[in-house]
Length: 559
Ligand code: ARG
Image (tube, rainbow, N blue to C red; front, side, top):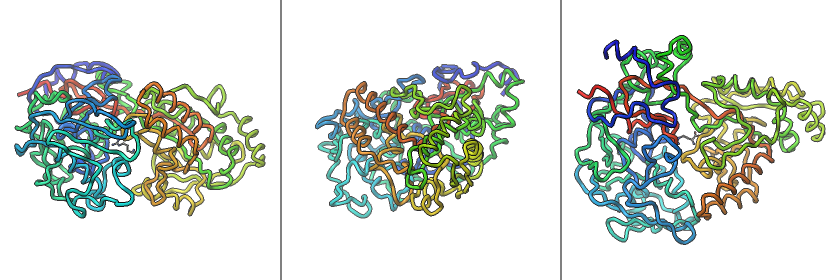
């Protein structure tokens, strides 16, 4: 890159949030990306990393997809492989899609409804293909005759998904599901041709329906994508497919990645980790650098779960005392401050969702440093005016800093916390995500975060508060094990309500009731600091993912 390019001022701070930076539509060239870690999987059924889901948009198409749109419209799936949105009948229980004509895999074979059905069948083979989302399993499985996936149960074993002809697919759900179009936008339902399926090894050589296919993948060091010769622009309303190649360099440490990004060697950090401290420190004194930086919300909520099954947190007044005693400013600093930590919040829904509302059930005083009188009154009501001893669970690193800030906050009203660090790698599966672990260590409070798997109120809040979604065996997100019949009922009503405005109101009611229970102490809606290189065109942070929409991007030098 010429020095002139690197000195030129960018489009401005946050210019790629809610708008497109350097729209060009120019085709050709190589988009150069960087990541510290490798993909979790190139098998579309086996990935959960947000950035790999964005990468999948280059490789695979789905019945529905989030549009190439930086605004609120980006949150609503549009037809991709399908001709139109799902046609719902039977109170949101039956969903029918019709495939577009003329779509092929990169090996030239036509895509049929059977290939989509086969992808859905593979999700049931969690023993062979773990790693991806499994929302479809309880919706489509028959508990009396559970389906074990295509490797164990044969091809025709899933009666709830029908393919009356090569272009039609019908899903018959056990329970209504208003957000079904969102599930049809997850990478795990990308069509897979049975003839190419190699089970657990499919990710090594996946077939593709998107504009790109894998040219080379050297584990831990490089992923190169090239154009898929069988992708037809005319059938794809979502993907501009600008560059000829996408080259991902893998395996750098975060500071080195920042340096090489800023030096112009790469265009975007694909992984979206955000600029590290060293690079952050340069921003204030470097207007060019700052003009190429975005600071979007990630739609992740950072929070502390309070555990009603661990005394004395079984008493709602104890939980409310903790809420009032929180020093929100100290907690936000522990999270990294307003730029790389996030926006303080007293409610749960990310601001982009329609149900987002101003809700401050447990005020923490005018300076947000805690309302200690209110906290003491709640302790009094709980019969614990002198406080008590308890344990808070966390993991080392950033979560530890938050736990320490909680300790400091509540110590002011006599609540004496000790900190228990759990293993990082298994934190969400077997630590905070395991009801058993929580009981074993007597963890009355847990530091955690959460981001939705699809951008709706159900996608965001149900896993955290729906009593039927508690997973006793691990991987549990309803950490507090909240199981309130009224909340469950409101969630179900939302699932068969077709009118979005009515659903919005239902979810606001759910949120108010959850806050009444005081089991979730919201801290911040996370934010990250991203750098966009000057070669990159058509750059924006995708509202459904909180990271740059890689598939939309092009480059200035297209030689
Ligand atoms: N829900 C998971 C979590 O909060 C993953 C969220 C992001 N991943 C995704 N593919 N949406 O950790």
